[in-house]
Image (cartoon, rainbow, N blue to C red; front, side, top):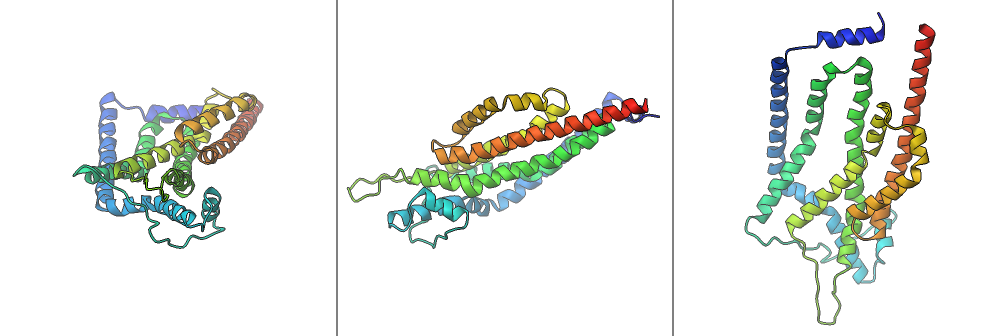
Length: 296
């Protein structure tokens, strides 16, 4: 019996009436909802600590800005040196910027939103596994083997994008925002006092934007496996891809060139990595086809 025949036999063995599929779907949805609820309760219990963790880039940007005002730092390059570990920033008095909320329950609802976002992130492995377990019986064995690496690569790439936001992009964005203040001795004071809800919106928006952009290798490789794109097509269109990446970076990042470059350069690198992945898939597919013809 050939591999294809065995795959067909496995799929036939996994066939079940529609009602059985609906019952299985209900059970898996219950597991997913339970995972999200548990994650929400856990995140809400530590919402204040999580929010303080998210404030670290703001604190770093505030320290750099305060040092800059005292002549101890020189802006973006000093911030870059601090981020890559070449320089260190001592705690500066008054360097921790203030935040406000203007409605009585604003911070409470902000913590609810934070807990909801954290719950989805924490429960993602459960959600992804339940989705895979539900659709896996309808896939060929080769498709199941191909799908699993992407199930692992997707969260890793998302975390890589989130780490870039937290450790690099946010400090630059917030330093740039603080640098727009008017804090001189002219008698006019224009200070940035962000609302807690607006700060959370900024953080979650950047995390999602970078995390999703970092899924480019997964998307292109899956399209290559499906035969929708090929390595030649991707290589010939690299100029348009670079232009598209630059446009996306300009849209999803604040209007400063450093943040745009910090998003565009990794995505461009991931694009060319995707071209290599698609090429490897084509080579492996060609080898398998040649072996199948030889066996026939």
